[in-house]
Image 1: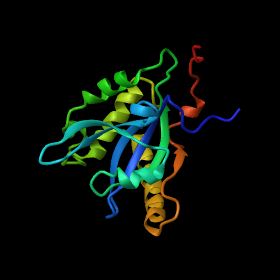
Image 2 (image 1 turned 60 degrees about the horizontal axis):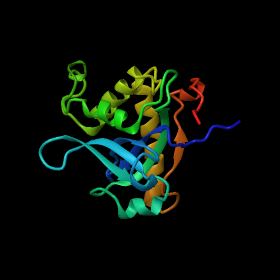
Image 3 (image 1 turned 90 degrees about the vertical axis):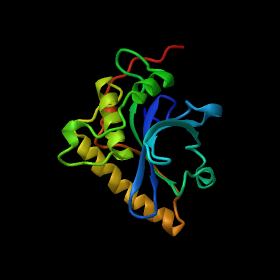
Image 4 (image 1 turned 180 degrees about the horizontal axis):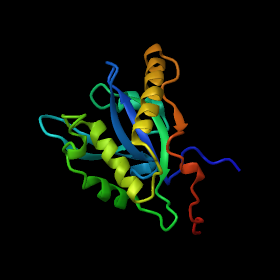
Length: 187
C-alpha cells in the first residue's frame, strides 16, 4: 500500500524563494490551520527583531500562494519530513506549536563557529532538532537534510521563474520517516 505524500499528520518543510537565490525556511502542518489550510510555523524578521510566527497557509492550491505571498516569497518546495504520529503518541498541532515556540531567537552556541547571524534557517535547524528529540522526525544528519532541501528548492525555483510547475511535493530522502512504524489510527 502506497503512503500518502501529505496527510493531516505530516510535517513538511515549506521553502519560499526570495528571487535572489536564497530561501525562507519554515515548517508546516497540513490541515492544522483554519478551514483545512496548513499551519505555517516559522521565525520571521518583520523589522529589527526576530520572532516566532504561526499562520494559516494554503499548501494545496498553489495559485493562492501567489496571492498570499509574504513579502516577495513564493512557495518553492514542500517535502514531507515527518509525522506528528510517533510510536507512543500523536502530538496535536497546538503541542507542536508550543514546542517550537520555545526555540530561542538566537544562534545556538555550538553553531557560532560556522554561523554568526540568526536567520530563519538557523531556527529551522533548531526546530528539526526539537522534532527529532520528540520522535516526530528521524534525521541522522541535519546538514544532509539542508543540502537536500536546497537542491530541490533551487531546482523548483527555476520552474517558478520560468512559469512552469509552481510548486512541488516530495518525500525527504534524508529524513527516513517512511521506515518508522507509527501507532494505528484510532477510530
